[in-house]
Image 1 (cartoon, protein in one colour):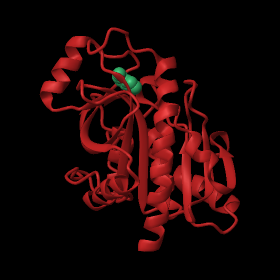
Image 2 (cartoon, rainbow, N blue to C red):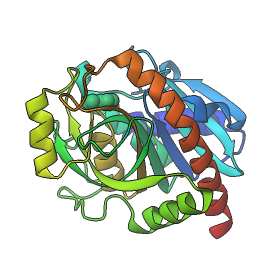
Image 3 (cartoon, protein in one colour):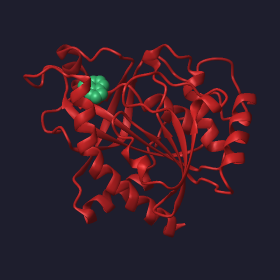
Length: 274
Ligand code: HPA
């Protein structure tokens, strides 16, 4: 609890009275949404106890507070990944800090590869459920009952009401959005064609290296979660060209523009709905 309380104290002291309601975690190449935050207060992770982030390009490593479409938000721009060898603590602390500073909802975005040919690069997928193939849970370790139960349920982890709202909004805004299952791998290598075929047969629609650990921590401490993938590439073996990180970032930036529009209006509607 100690680190989280200290991080929350730093954030609250710098927040100029703003009490964030929605936490945002932005994926590779999707940091642009953070640029639209008004009255932004930006805090480097170095100033926050327990916050660490690797040096993968596209990950900035700042907590940005402010308003997006009127909604008070706290945006984690830059995230720790298990493939960096960081301890699970580096994933737990930022998410629990969001809860501690007052957020009740977490919106997560990521870049992902498609396991199906009909999910085109540049399209958006609303995550309906996940398969955890990282071989790890971020809750492994001594039980800390201060945050949530020892054996949390992950049924309905991707909040059904938020999903219904997002689907309805996307339809009204004419932004193509389909639901699917996200499968998380440890990385950092991309998958083999055999793995992509296997994942598809297991029920995965998209594959990536993030999101699932954060969602598990968020559900454990009672945050409502919505998550959207920007499909950046066909999974290994589904296209002529092998997956490349630079291309992933480029396509994420393109698809990210639609996602930014969608999430901005979503936050405005969420603000007036409650
Ligand atoms: N595999 C895993 N992670 C990814 C991919 C992929 O094809 N694309 C973007 N992140």
